[in-house]
Structures are given as C-alpha cells and as structure tokens.
Image 1 (cartoon, rainbow, N blue to C red):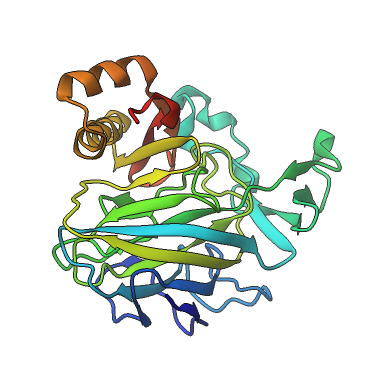
Image 2 (cartoon, rainbow, N blue to C red):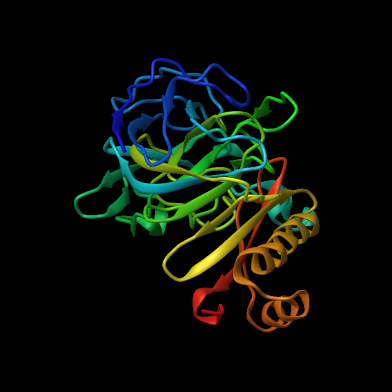
Length: 305
C-alpha cells in the first residue's frame, strides 16, 4: 500500500478512456487537488476550462470490466478561502407558470462566500437583503466523480450515467465509500467539482463551488458486478440511478438496491421486496443537469447480520 502525492498539470471535461495520469495499485491512497467547476485552483487562478474539470484519470491495476472499483473518500478539504454560488434556482425546478418571476437579471452573477475550514463555516461576503451576515456550516462533498464509461464513450462531466459523473449527491462526503462498475481496463477514475456545501438537488445549478485538496483510497472487488454506482457510510448502504425523467432514475436506483441485497446480503427476492417496501428511503441528488440522480437508501440496522 502506497501513498501517492499527485499534482495535476491538465484536466479533462469528460469521463472517458483518456491517457492515465498515474497508475496505482489496489490499497493505494492518493493525495491530490481539484479545481472548481469553472477551472479555478487554490489561488483563484483559472487553470482549466469548465464545466467540472476532472483530476485524473487514475489507472487502477488489476481492475477489469466486470469488477467493481472501490473508492474510499478519506479527506475532502477546501483549499482556498472563497467559493461562489449561483443566485437563481433552475427553471425546471419550479412550476412553469412561475418561471417569469425568477430573478433573471442576476442569473449570470454569482455570490461570493468566505469559507473558513477551521471554523467549519461559509459566510456571504456581501449582504443580500435580510441575509446579512448569513453563515452556514460547511459539509464538503464531491459533485462529480466516476470511472470511464463503456464502449469508448467520452461523456461530459456535466452529466451522469452508469459510470457515475455529475451526480451532485450531498452524501458524498469524507468517510464515505463509493462503488463503481468497471467498464474499461484500469477503471480510469477521476474526480472534481468540489462543493463546500450544497442543498439537495443542486437546484440552482451550483453548490458553494470551491477547489479541494482530496485524499482517496482504492480497491478492486474482482468478479463482483454492479450496474450503477453504489455507496455506504456508517449508517446506510445506498445506490444511485442517473437518468431523465426522474422516475427512470428512481427505477435504476431501486433495481440496483434489489440486486445488491440479494447478491451480497443473502436475501431472497421476496425478502428484499419486503424489506425495501417497509424501510427504503430516497434522497435527491442532481435535478439540474441533463441526467437526474436519485439515491435509494437502506439503513444498516435493518440488514441481516
């Protein structure tokens, strides 16, 4: 097991079969940095073109199609003092008749936040009406990360699919383990689009966008198949479906959970149906980008020993 320190020199705006920036072994950890959604680094300099420039891809030795790539998010730390967010909700998040009431005059402006990692807070730099001195707790999360998709595709980091991508799920914080189906040799994992905080759904098209220092650790589950991204934290296992319309994303996530409960937890189809019917929970990931994300969760306390 090796700890790698990697400094990116270029970024990709797609998840695809790009030339890897580093080869690593199962069990290795990587410390690296990401830029924000517009390509700004820790100093605020624009070093890449948006949207969502990705650090990587990292080639994981022994990972092959039909395996699962395991990515443990060890640490996600904002590495500059300011972040930005958009001012206006997405038009598709509200009733069509109410869309003309949105503040289109400020649509292309952003608000600046002062991010204090020591205090664990983000505060508006300039007052916004009654939101003077508005301060929120930060919960750093990765908006966009995943593996190369199948079939030599290069899929924009603006959207998501079976490979992961721009899921914008606020549950992807430090301490979480993510699982991705492997479609190409080496998996080709990449990451970016750090948020100091974000509301469910990324309804305004952004969180508090900021650059990160990140550490992750990889592993490979040989011969363990998955159809969609999965994850777990201390309290839940969860699956993610990425599609539009939203009901299709729900179907993907729900089907993946049914399969997982049978394959790894030994439940029969009938048992898994009964458990989910009484205990399942859903979170909204992204509902702004071309593909929506729905998260299907089961509390670990309900799982068989």
